[in-house]
Length: 222
Image 1 (cartoon, rainbow, N blue to C red):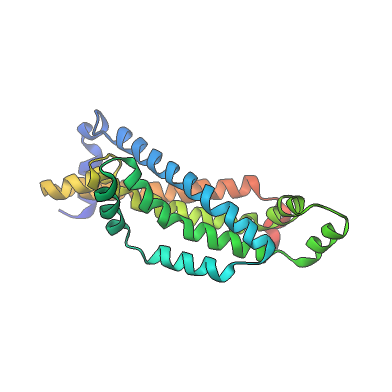
Image 2 (image 1 turned 30 degrees about the vertical axis):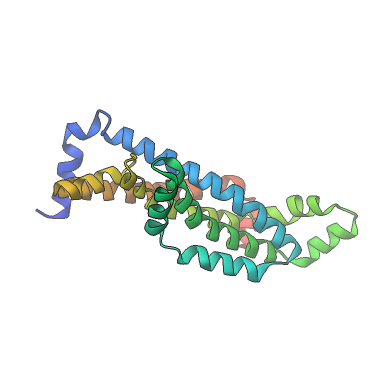
């Protein structure tokens, strides 16, 4: 039985579309985990990246932090967090946030540093405050790259949030973990297909957000 047949069998089975283990329920759980992790990572990474990028300081430290964050094994961190904190959402959020903060942090810093100096100098010469320069001059220009960092973090979270199933939580990872345990490869392939589809949907959402949030002039210059 090939992969296409597995996918067809999984999605054509009405039992997979209802109940606590149905696709709508598991998909909604996965969306909740992913959105929560992305919001928390953005709350940490965006302000630090914006401020350090604005002042042009701390770039080397951010690179070291980002490298360290990327080097940490996500599953290993999940195991350690679960042993230390017990089962629940917090041990799942920790590795997802650690995974997502580096691309947000580094990309935001680099986006701010890529803004042309003349408009910034002109705003300073007109007496604009540093907060105004950051939010009204630099941020609109840096926004496409910042959204790129958020997009990268979001896709990594969506793809990795399956680890929630390893600590008895839900999400699309439930199909993969349960399917492997039951030797039900139809369920494994179906779950993996749903995760891939959600990652593609995330790409589409950020593309739409970029069209809505970035001014046409900035888009053309990028």
